[in-house]
Picture 1: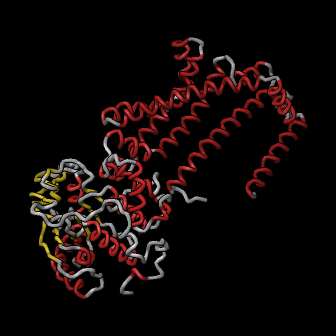
Picture 2 (picture 1 turned 180 degrees about the horizontal axis):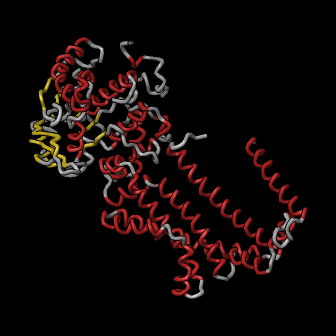
Picture 3 (picture 1 turned 90 degrees about the vertical axis):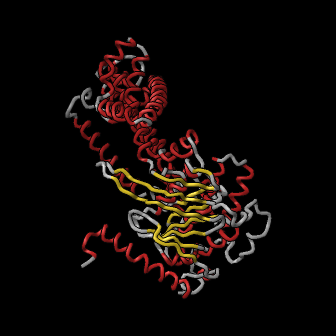
Length: 305
Length: 253
């Protein structure tokens, strides 16, 4: 594989003009997307002893999350890895305020989260882009809901679409775009409300390798430029090491934090870097046991044989 | 164009058989009218304005009744969908009521409203109200949950969530409900007019029967088909196709 996929000429999505001119959208009269003040004393997101129990139809109870304690600093890029079914997506829903924990509290800036708020935007795994709106309309949606004046909205639509290299597609409908482009629309839609915290739920899981590499670069760049706090859920350990300042490893059902890893490899990193692979190996060894448990739960004893 | 040619051949053949049977005089002309007789009736009907008046009267009833049932149906459908109890009780009742042909409401309507326009409007409304209501209700339930979550996530609340997310998300269901409602209302109106004698296409049909004028009967039947086809095939199909293309539900041709 080519070491730097950003320069791959065969990548068909990138007919958009902005590519290659990294400086182009950095400069100029951009709307206020100033980097937020980095590390302050209180954590940006503080999960205090979170537990969540689902009640099944037959009265059975399932403990999905168990005593999660986690602090995320402002501007930090935290990755959460774990086998499928470990409740990591659910945790993002809790932080987004779409559900309430059975026990414990979610604090953002020391304030209790009890409802959705545009200071925390979740990018869903299935994206949830609105097919009845154009790309521009989707990006505008959150701003419209938060009563941003129309002229400002127009300006920001243009700015954020440029940021994700989709300027030419402002008037396209969602179904006309490829998977990677839709992913970038979702990112632009989330960024346009200018949230302090960006919650991403396996956003790149369904993409091909080239597109994913490219979006890693773009996400890292946007993160560095805007200084948002990002909590990124994935089942791909290498991806977590590639992107995160820190990686939290979850156990399989009930979801608990098994271990946290600080990733202090220099940026920019790349998925194929030896150092990334080495760190990933270390985490993967810890994860193996949980994956086996999840496979066993899913396939029964067939796996063992 | 090939499709058009096939259609042309089919209908030309049909017309030829009809003309042949009429020419052979297998049945008397008051039982089996000839194509040229029907054509004459059509021309005469439009010439002496009786068709125009009938169409105008029927369409006025139709538009009034349909508009009424769309408004009522939307309110009712949203109301029913908003509450689990209502949905189980009223929703279930509505579905069972839908198996009742709406013309069955005519005796009651005549009793309640007398032989007035209101009685026929009532039958039309009962014909399409349930389709619209049920479509609204299912629309609300078929919306993928992700849209609601994404809407809430991006700051939409209560009315704005309804207006900007739930309503557009259920639009495909609403349109198919409106289409079905129109078809039911049209059938109800014609049957109502046939029984409850007053101006209108249905009454024109019965007049043809009373006068033993089968050419007139067939001519009016053709009119009824044509109007139904124009509204369904042109108005609703166009809306549906546009919607599907915009949403990417079918590949744009």
